[in-house]
Amino acid sequence: MTGKILVVFLCLLATLFSVGAASHTGLMTWMSLAASSTAFVAMALNQFLATRPRFLEPLFGGLDRIYHFHRQIGIAALVLILIHYFVTPDFQGKQLTAGLNLLAKEAGKYGFYGLIALIALSLVKRIPYTKFEVPYGLWRQSHRLMGVFFLFIAFHQFFIKRPFDGTALLANYLNLFAVIGVGSFAYTQLMAFLKRRSYTVTSVEKHAAATIIEAKPNRGPIKARPGQFAFLHFSKAGLREPHPFTIAGLGKDGSVRFAIKPLGDYTARLREEAAVGDRILVEGGYGRFVHTRGGDKQIWLAGGIGITPFLAMAESLLPEEKRKIHLVHCVRDGAEAVRADMLAEASGRVPGFSFHLHDSATAGRIDAEKLQASVPFEVDGSELWFCGPPPLRNAIVSGLKKAGRKLGKIEFERFEFR
Image (cartoon, rainbow, N blue to C red; front, top):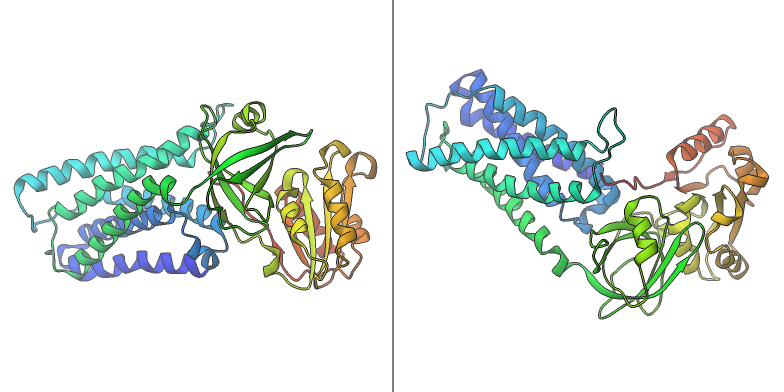
């Protein structure tokens, strides 16, 4: 929440500074300038958030929350850009040269149309009234192009005729965010060289519910904690797009393990084509879904492939673990269970940890009553750590409330970045 407040504050400062810069020009011109200035700061901040800054995760609650807020900022910027476009400013103002002013006007026009198209594309996952879903690769490339059109907008705001000179507070403020936005875009283009670590696939296991891929680092490993996720990038054709996957295991030698369910085209190809010896790039770890942040009593609830973060967390538990932790893995049938043997072993190795596999085919759909019956400690005051389909989370939380149970807190990730 703190991160959101900070971003909104920085955007509103542009609105505030525009009052002194252009209030004398009339209401409509000031409104247009205020909208464009605020939108520019919002776009620059969005470019910065696109660098996936890990140090900001505590302020937002994790990279997943940063991405969702990133989307909201994009919508707000789109609205402000439209206001600036339709409320035509009347600048009887300053310009550097007529040539640069005309060039800046053209740059602003192309930047406007480009951003409108790309923001609209990024907001639409599926074409309405059709079964056509925008391919992830197209969505990702459209995000990369946003930085290019931001350069157009930055040139536009710097050289376009305006009712204040270059020493005005607003001008300096916008120039600062131009540097931030352009620098952030350049950084994202170099991210593959700066943040990704090289690994080699050492094992590929095809289970009914998931493809389990294990890889060891070729040099230095990523810095990750159990429960976090990473971006996985294969070197072979057809699998080169980086996709986020939860880390299902971390070895002492720096190795990483992923349990990936074949849900779409990419994950289906990965299941068929990933092989031992493949070179991959891994970037991470990201996220705040780390149980060591939690309290003394934790209920871990996983739905289907949502078991992945809990696999890494359970495997990392030591016998002297002080917390009371109970893991429930809900599956449609026993074939969906992933590494249940390891979880059973962990429950025998760690006194404070217990594990229950809920097979819906034999035990029926899980509900709050069944969940409570499996927990070996008092539910009241316990934290619920959840990973799985949102309807399952909502049903369990609602059921516990109706039963008069008061959870300490509810932790979950919004694991959808588009």
